[in-house]
Image 1 (cartoon, one colour):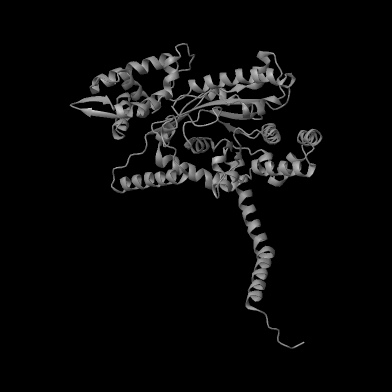
Image 2 (cartoon, helix red, strand yellow):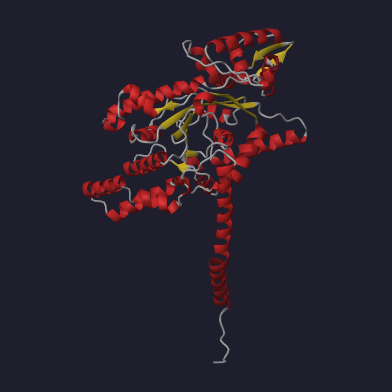
Length: 482
């Protein structure tokens, strides 16, 4: 019993690793979990009392519980049984696919990360890059929305900064849940985005079982009152104009909506605009079929070069923020009222008839979004230069033409953001931004559009092109914010 036992060094090292792991699992991990849960509960209590935010219980439900609910959902189980009978695929394999899809889609919302880390980062980043402004909001109509309604923010998609900007501006009222594309499924971004309450969506998936699992998750979240943020265009605009709506997520939300249920479904149109979109040249490049396609490493290198260049300009004291970023909130649209006026119940329609109704509704939402897109200095001044592409403008002529354009926009109900309430300053800001980026050139006191940058000038003018083209647009009063 007292003899010495000799062990190889690698066995001893392995035993130490197992002992350390056991100590970590039994002693340290439970304490860390208790500490983190305590902090999360403190944040939840704070936002329930200090802020006007009510977190739906669905968002606080453990992720594994939601995955199990999807796996055992009657419609999902019926689809599995149908696949088994029609194609002869093993039930175990089908259920494993459902489980994989559910784990891929379902977020892991963390209130502490959302309101402490995410909100702080979004606020800092947005204000570092832009002069962020909340322009127009139909406050009376927004205040009249029943707080028990399921809210869906529908917005135009100009930049990946949209996620940051809207989450920051809405954080004191709601905790938004985004649908995020596969581009974000990289470590560690995936874990962070999922903890912020976003769910991942495979674009153009041809697997009916995947689409069913996704639609059931969306319907469960909407029925539970989780606020959603949706980009009906389905992706970033490449030319600055609004893209036609894609019906996937909207159809998922509407196909199971019960007009007689206690909870209404309310869509709020949101218009976003920037004086500078960080990805503008990359987006325009997609329109050029002859341009060589760049890989991930090239994009990463360009991003680093862009950041390094701006850091250098900051250090030299010559850096300007990228102009104004503005968000407008339009009049809410009650789905219950809309269906009552139309005299339809989407649940009773076949797929073809329902798609027609959803397409009609989505078109109306896109019109509502177009009407609340903010008119910012760069879009305004770019539109003036495109009226006379080859001629030169004196500063006085430019300001006179901009004032005429503003008058036309106001007559059509556009929401114009005028920094500091000073129109002369606003036009000067737009002109300065275009000069700094060499989209406009100045020579002998005359300003001309740079022919080499005409596509980029059109990109910014296109943001408000619909407001100028739609002569019959009904509008609210124009807004000039100080």
